[in-house]
View 1: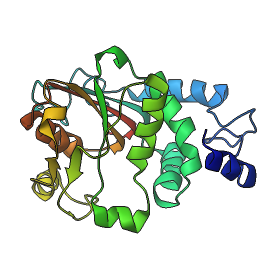
View 2 (view 1 turned 180 degrees about the vertical axis):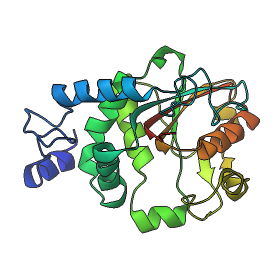
View 3 (view 1 turned 30 degrees about the horizontal axis):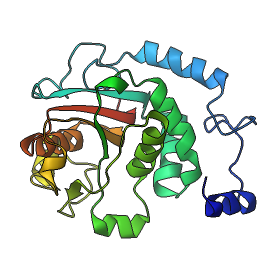
View 4 (view 1 turned 120 degrees about the vertical axis):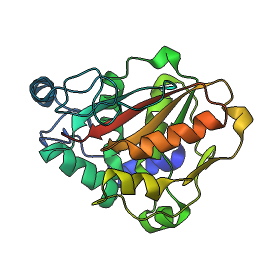
Length: 234
């Protein structure tokens, strides 16, 4: 921890709670009761084994039926639902970055392919959206996951070159059109032949994940995996 981080922690200490139930803990972490509750909910909803969508207990679903072979699979930890959605909104829209370690550590518990990954890349924000929000929540999660796994992370290889409208409310065809050519790779030689892990906060239709994966593959990446905190419910 840097000197500035130590000073910041002394002045603005990280809450020592479970981010979901707010129970007091020895440190910021998901409590055992919330882990058990999540396990039961995951089992009840079922989950697609390829894209991680909830409510689709199958090998593939409508989200990922047409995914190319270089897109291996996405792992999602929680459904975009109730307290999980609320916590994600706190991180994403209320600038509660202190939540990142607990959410990223929970994601790591569900990451089965650590040995297969050469490089971690967060789904990027356009520079205008970044200035508006002040941070990229996917990048915060990626930094923590990189630090815990010792897999290198790069924030500058995949760039969002188009400031596209929000995807919320758009149908699948409109989402795909909206993101067409939205991303580019700055230094293709740095991903050539590598297996890349894309980190994002949420997967709904999978359009953003797939467009990022397509861009990376066109520029030389071999295999694309995904790890998201939340996924939609069918």
